[in-house]
Image (cartoon, rainbow, N blue to C red; front, top):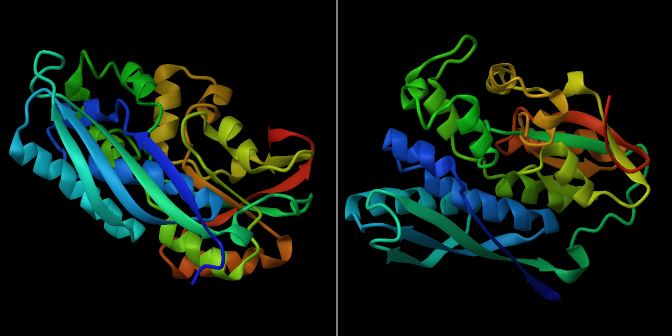
Length: 293
């Protein structure tokens, strides 16, 4: 069904979020993060993920733990509608502690050449749509661990803070949302001009990747629907607002830029396909980068 198929590939890991999983001894969702970090990247080019492979390095192969990790990877592939076609588990005795592991993945997607996203038609007035995150996703965890002194005080993960219905550990371990299916639905019917996956570098480094030269993303801070967890981190760590938006997703996991006249249609499609909380985040204006006002 493709006139000129082009393969788009992506690879990534989960980072130090793994430390939270190890402390909590909960390993069945971290694989979802691994899949998400890869497939959410290739969808930014308009590609449908086809296959995924995982790589697990561990100090000692504990079959039950590896099974839990791969269970999450398989669930992530279901959510992304792609096939888990292989992987590798490597024991590294003497190189890493027996109970520790690292996790990375690789995906290949396909898109018709004529449908590869480009921002040539982007212009002032286009609308930026936010797809909410499930939390911190899989970036900034070195800072998160420092904010709460988790390495020295792991019991803080069992604590529930005001305004949160989960313990800190549960909130931090919430798997990265996979946006593939709803975004592909939008791409079928809307002239999407740009997609940004909000990962490390936050708003300031990720959104500009999808912007046309001479265009900036103008976003009102009060329009960003930021969960309590991020306010808690900012207050606890005395982190500046700029650094928060330059490190974390602040409740926005992905943004789509669409023509103003198609914004309502895009939102309708998202609301009907698993993104009921998607909303208008800002607009494209003349300038460069991201303008938070």
